[in-house]
Structure formats: structure tokens, C-alpha cells
Image (tube, rainbow, N blue to C red; front, side):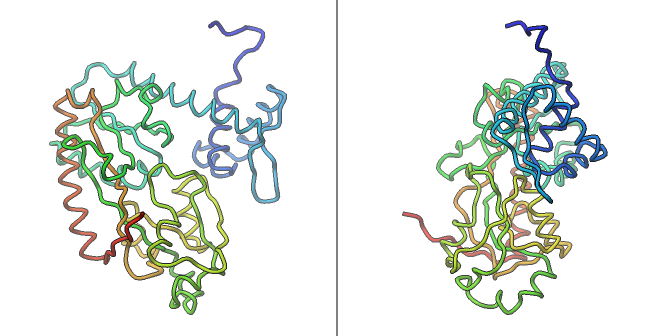
Length: 327
């Protein structure tokens, strides 16, 4: 279908600024990601609103929310940008046997994969070219969206029974309540009590519906449920959720595979004793394309070695409890 010349597409810079601002629900965060001034992001969004004739954000004193029109446009723009990114990979993939493309969510990329890229390169002999393709978590199971014919491995959360045998490396997940040292000191008396008495504390939460990863309710099933019901402060991005916890804004549910640098540096500490084992691990699995490529299979083997080392190291420093069986 041809584009009607009477209704040209908005400028790409405006669409990128809008997508980042909508994802973070924060103009400053969007500006930092895009390496722009906040005024530039605001200007792009104002131009976009003028161009399409609809208000996209409700602006409040210290926050913004998407309008109904903004939510519709954000879904369309996010999908479009992901298709463009995947298409660029397709064009740039010049049959380079060294290139390995891994599709993953943003938090998985920033908190789990990027810190381990050097170890992966070493395990692969330093010859691999590893590309991380960020996808919305909901799209990781949809080959038509993420162009699975150009992706070698996918990193996402699964039930234990849902992980393909022999074609995936599993990083067992465990969860714990964590907070900043300052928050722990301020609320020390409360944190020494049973979790059932933590209801007055602020709980930071991941606003997106769970697609396999753990949520506060999973932790409460094992350790007890606070009364009165806690007040949740929602964040759309898990990376910024952790930043808020580091800043002392509340308790956050820490996924063990993402916690290494925060616990090692002491910027976050355990608010209660130990991690609780969780039955939906982070799995890295081969796609059909990856299963045919020696470099991708070698990369999966390298992930297997990392999984063993991470499991041994984490078990040594952080105690683990098993979650209660779910009915």
C-alpha cells in the first residue's frame, strides 16, 4: 500500500523522541537515552502533536502519562522501530559467519548480557561479532515481529516445562527484596519484623504485565503478604526501577541474574534474608536459524559455561530458599 503524499509520515527524530518518552514516561530520561537536551525532546513531541492533531501526553507537575491517543501511537511506533531495526540487521548481515544476533528485552540486555559480553567473546575465541537486538518482551515469542530468520538466539523467561530440551541454556531465577543502604538504615526497625508488617513501606513495581518474570506476588507467596496492602510505585522500565531503588525511593524486587553489580558494589542490599527460588528461569535458546549455524551453537555452549559459573558464584554469597509450590 502506497503512502498518501497528502499525509506524510512525521519526522523520524520526532517519532524516536516520542517512543523514548512514552517508554520511560519521563522526558528527561528520554533525552538522556537519545543524548539530547530535554527541551529538544519537548519540542519534537509538541511538533508531533501538532502534526497529527492529537494530544499524546497528560503533563503533570513531576510526571507524564500517555493519553488514549498516545497509547495507540506508542504501540504503532514501537513496533515500527523494531521492524526497522530488524530490517537493518537483515540488510547488514552479509553472510558473516562470525556475526551472532541475540534478541532480548531491554533489561536483559543492559543488566545481564552486556556485562557478560567480554566473557562471551573470550569463550568464543575473540572472533565473534555479537549483536543485541532489543525487542519488547511480548514480541520475543512472535517470529513475524522480530524477524526470527535473522536471529540466532532469543533470551526470555519461560516456565521450566516450556524450555526446549537440548536447545537452550537455563539461568535459574531467584528473587529477593532489595533496597539502598540508606533506605535499609532508615527503616531498620520495620525491616527486622516479618514481611507481613511491611505494609507501610513503599514498594517499587514493574508496571508491565508479567510475561514469565517474577513479581511481588510471587515473593509474597513464600515470605508472607504485607498488611495493610502495600502502596506500589510503578515504573515502565526495570533499569530505571533499579535506579529509583538505588536512590532510596523504596523496596524493589531484585531478580538475582540482574543483581550482580548492585550487590557487589553495595549500592543495593538485601532487605530480608536470602533469595527465593523461582520456577520460571531466564532461558537462552537457539532459533531455527541459529541451530543451523556453528557460531550460534558455539555461543550457546559458551552461555552454558557462564550459567555454571554464575550459579556457583551466586550460591556461595547469597543464600537461597525454595518457593512454595503453587497449586
